[in-house]
Length: 393
Image (cartoon, rainbow, N blue to C red; front, side):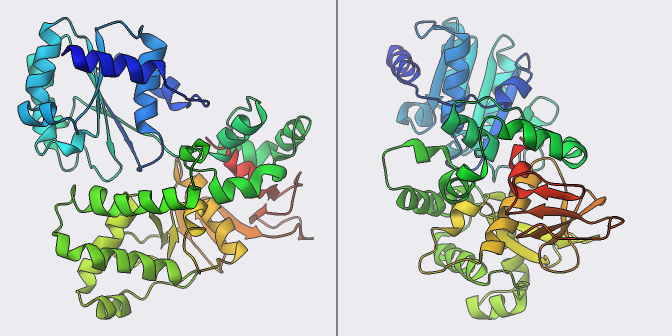
């Protein structure tokens, strides 16, 4: 056990976390079983270690971070390891990549029942469906999602400011005042293109080639997060990657699932399930027409975030597609997004129709459509700067 404490201490003392994620304050840390889900690369490991650093001394042996990649943990299992830690006085066990243990949900349930004084905080893939596929965790686990950086978090990091997040209601009703207040300190559009290109994943802070790192992460999402967790045979790996590529190359067109199925040599139903897995891995977003949902064909399939779009050489995406991707991704956290009308039009929460445009335009004052305007610092009326939607979380 001593070697685990040494590793824990080293990781906590050498932690570099320039941005404190708001999720840290949204979690009820009094719960005994807490799950942190998120796409690969968004900073789940850093999040666990940051919690340890904020709440415990590095030498405090009542808190311990472990990774289930460790061969000792894999050999004896999570439950037995947790028992050793608990009987040595442990109180908080932070478990990274919990899904690497085949029967992880069963073992977490054992921990909950056998060690009443132990709190477990575990991190895992966004593909994990904690309650739907693991009924033994129903009623005992509180699940949260960690996302990549919002534009607001990216801007705070780059400028040293501490801009707050705003609700969609605030943005719609008070965008003029909010934008003017922000512009007193910085012009967000000076940083917006950088965010679209490389601001979503925290590893842009590392001194490595961002695109290569992102390509590696995307492949790991498919090879590990989808194949391992969904228990898909390795022989289908190339097909899933091909499907992802074909979806990406289709741009703004409605996906032709029957044609994809024929090209890939698999059934239409299988193609739809694989697209769903790509969505759960946070590689794509499936946008449905109003009133429709999976397993029906989506009206649009967008990449999950704009950073992914710049990794598909030699594909050059239309700027409007990039703007749509940003808009849908930032709204996706707390709102329902549907496709309506023409390209660039979306229905949010069955209530607000948004259209993404490049420049402000003269419109009839009675228009109920809201406009997200790319080339805009401060909006007027129903025309809102596109960048301001990056302040929703």
